[in-house]
Image (cartoon, rainbow over all chains, first blue to last red):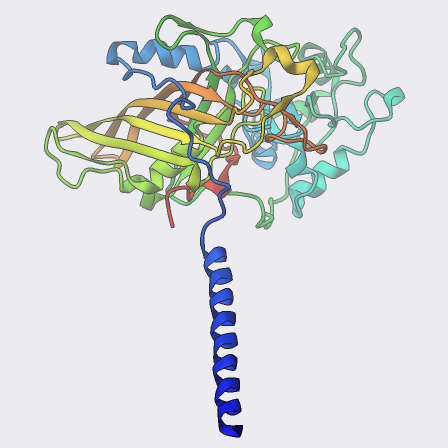
Length: 108
Length: 338
């Protein structure tokens, strides 16, 4: 009688432990699966894929993208104040200093 | 006039005002004075930038600029101020500068022996399958004339040398090395008047960029770069609401997301005697959707600011000597590296 109760208790304990492991395993598995927050763009969402750029349009396209001639890019801006001061002092010229909150010639 | 009479220099206020070295000390010293006196603001301040004439010793040449709405210093007035100085202060060598001293190590410097590339980004008008044109003045989001975005790519010597063909035979094809493809792909965005889409490694849905040896002579290797890149942020899980005031400018797709599908074409020349690239001209063209002001959501987490789909062109070329501007996307230069 006592032994059968012990056996029953052991079996119950084993079931509880296995169930617990199983639940724990489920949780672990759930964490291992990447959360579904990365949605691959659907084909219909994708932008129009352009045709290959024709070689004979290369120069024209570059000219469209780049700044227009005659703008501030044509001025030979230096980008180091100390070097510019040295040059100005050596050549006897004033500085023209352009300061932006973000680099005027780059990402701003 | 500027080229002839001035030494022009362009600077980033955020860098110059904070750098911990002699140049930073000098800049902070000269920028204490207000301009003009009644405005009580420093000479150099504000997001739109300021231009001033100045001597090498730090004396400003404009005390006021009549009629200037931007409070900048008109170069003609600066030149008058310069010519009013005694000749002894203007002659070459009149100003003696100390050595620059140790440069603040936080200031980004191009890699030794590296290759600096200049990037321009322009949203174009027209149709990708038809005629494309430059944007008109009124086709901007602001009051000014449309200007391309600008950025740079700093390639290390190791990265640009990896561009050379393993097999120097005409017609040989090989993949664009990751050390070059990564920084290039990161720059396929729009900084022209918008906060460009930030591309991380997971946003590169596909890319196929190859180099082909077009010609090999005793002096030159000529290469052609071509291929495509497909970039996309994750689609939003919820429908998007647009800022009411900006609605007419924006894409009406409630599930829009940043993306760029681009074709690339480029021509590179390597001088075997000088052991350097003498040409690195690349263009990218494709349909782009990207954030305008904020990367997707603002503080209330309700409003998206997306530019409606449009053609975006990106041009890359060797920067002119002396043009050194820290790249915007240093952190994403390892885009294709693990």
